[in-house]
Image (cartoon, rainbow, N blue to C red):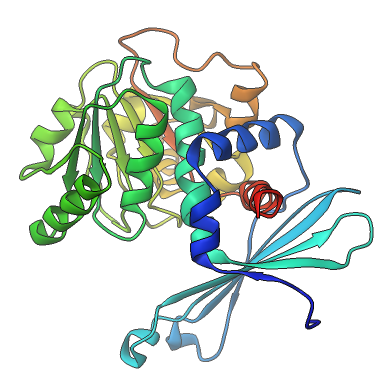
Length: 314
């Protein structure tokens, strides 16, 4: 890395990537397309360490190349440092030379929320007023802010396994101007919501079909392996299913792969991805009563679009 190569920290990225402009950048990116292989995953060190290196490349020939480098080192909890580390390297598409390095976690948080908000613009009802955030982890406030930026949300419910964390997140959102309150009981909160966004690492379904009202949009972003689940089989079978990318979701999304393996749904139950929605190949929601479900596992195309927008603004 040369001394002149700029590095943009998390604060820079959060400052310039507002959700309205980022959603539009993702809309253009999915419409235009890019070369974006499914992420590469490599075990690092002893098998029992759980250490993983993830590489997420994407490029538009002649325009831009980018790769996100992510490490997941579970043992870092004992070291007192973050389990996940991420950096993004942006390169010139014509020369292949580095342009900048961006802090990867901030980029991921922002583009994840924006991708769900983009999907919601096609899949949730335009008059959606109540948002439920399931999970009170690091990603949760960004999901709430992104959905509120595109829909007229008047009430945000926050549910977490630990009530104290849900209450703290609700207070954090209120201080940022989001009308949030903690939800004591998940089933009831789901039944009150117009949009349900899940950002957990659960391996057991949390959102059950019996609690979901007609017309609800379900947004699942937490599970990113075949072993993770956020919605039960009955909900997956009931809803009209959409994904960020077919290649990624049909390889990694347990919320789809597990019911497929059991014959609950077939591959044709997944009707469209984000590219099809933004290009008009699928209309998205077709009736006010339809239950829609968007499953995201993350796409390198989103990182590239977010990084290019950040550099343009910075």
